[in-house]
Image (cartoon, rainbow, N blue to C red; front, side):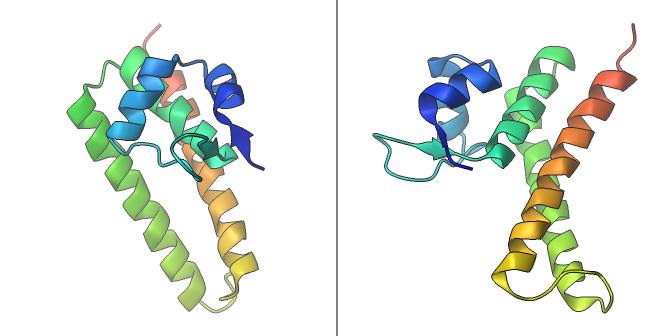
Length: 121
């Protein structure tokens, strides 16, 4: 599902300036032209993770970049292993890749949720 910039700002609970910084840092890479960027549900999950890392856990910008890079590497490895492991339930076609992307989005949501629950009260 494609999400407009206006809807993304509302659903991600971030302001325009913050989103511009995240795009500049390449933490989010919208689809489409810069004048009318479009976002995905995976981008929303990633935004929630970024927001949680910064606001709730106090991770600085450099740390967020490192964490996102590691999450991306894990996702890529999971996809690669899924394509090579027989019986993994993933195929080599585009549908299999799209399905793996959804699993990756769930992983981001789970990571953000675990980070919130591990926080001292």
